[in-house]
Amino acid sequence: MNDRGLDSDVLDDIDLFLDGVSELNNLECNAAADLISYQLERESIPHQRVCGSTQRVSTGEVIFPHCWIELPNGEIIDTTLRLYFPFAEDVPNGRFRPGANYQYKGTVNPTPRLNERLINQLS
Image: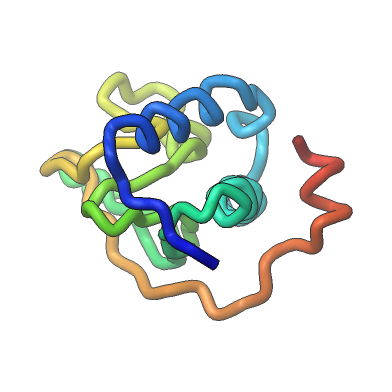
């Protein structure tokens, strides 16, 4: 696979995909990460599926387990954190740089991604 760089066109493509898949907001974090990973891989966009925990610093609340995507430029793709903090107005969503309000800690997810048939049913 020939990895595409993360220039502004590629980042715009990622944002368009995220905006176009409203189902991402209703999926559990592992399924959403698998669906996003599948699309990024199809487009030869380098990334890693990560699982671990996310902490809301202001309250100390921790979501574990939680899964997301990390891009080589340090950005995170997470479309499900709002499910766990539905009343918080500062919850990041989509593609973003990690901030001080939410701390992500995890490792590369070694489990196999959902198979293509299931992913196609989700999207």
